[in-house]
Image (cartoon, rainbow, N blue to C red):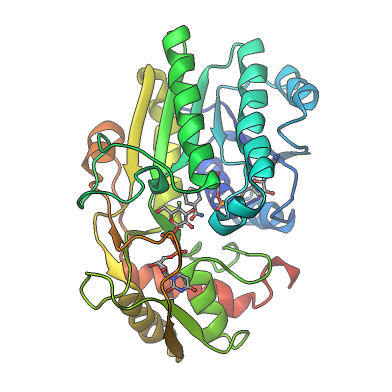
Length: 339
Ligand code: NAD
Ligand code: UFG
């Protein structure tokens, strides 16, 4: 199967990996991104790795007129929608910015799609919509809730998409709820390039290992988990991207709304990640235990069997691949794409 896929936020971490895999699968890819949290260098590297070109538009998805121009220039089969803001802590400080960029941005995109009769969308949702789950592993029918503005934007967008599908049966919508994406492409050419101090565990650990930060703060060791530190379902970004390719390949047959967890089904604690990273990189990662981070939950991992049934997808990479690939990217690009 081939055709044109529009990727919003395609210069970002998950977007650049997905763009690469879509190109390799034979799709033509059009990326729109305002580069607020990314650089064009990621797409240049994607082009080199794939030997194919990406059509790029620097625009903000809130600029509906510009999006309409993109749809008028290309007959787009489906949209993979990554663009948005994603920092949980920041979302409590500047909630209006999050609601505007994520929710208004999505409305703008959906209106442009509707006008050009393009009704197939794959949306980046998050395991954050499960709030503090009553038990693990989490299945897609668990109740959803949010504890911060970022999580609420994901939850509201999911609801908006469900309303849209009810109003018009021609929409095919896939909501992908990611657990914790980490790692990088095997080539070491593309990876996660956080601006400033990383919020997430893996980029922080990588920056400690490469000597950019002194030590990791472990947020609490008194959770009811295997060793007291938080447990998450880490998933290799290439596995995650592969699920998007399969979603695009299957979307014509998936009418209405399909909601899928993307995880491995395995949970690892913070200290288990530190240990795996040290083993994979041969570097020491000094750490100290500090207070719990407000809003964190004890443990969270997926039942990902529905994605296997619906998409024929399952994660292939284990934790060793995830940390080794993260380290290769960090070691070769200590300053991210600025190098
Ligand atoms: P990222 O910041 O690397 O990528 C997002 C991209 O969107 C960036 O290139 C940014 O410049 C662009 N962008 C932001 N606002 C835009 C706007 N208004 N118009 C146009 N472009 C805009 O983030 P990522 O980690 O690749 O995440 C991609 C998506 O996946 C996001 O929607 C995020 O909420 C979701 N998600 C990420 C994680 C995670 O841990 N990384 C987990 C769950 C869900
Ligand atoms: N952690 C530390 N020290 C750090 C960073 C994180 O100990 O410096 C711990 C956290 O307390 C948690 C674990 O490492 O136990 C993972 O934390 P992350 O910040 O990497 O990831 P979260 O699970 O908190 O959140 C991520 C994304 C969210 C998304 C959520 C969905 O950042 O956007 O996964 O599960 F909503």
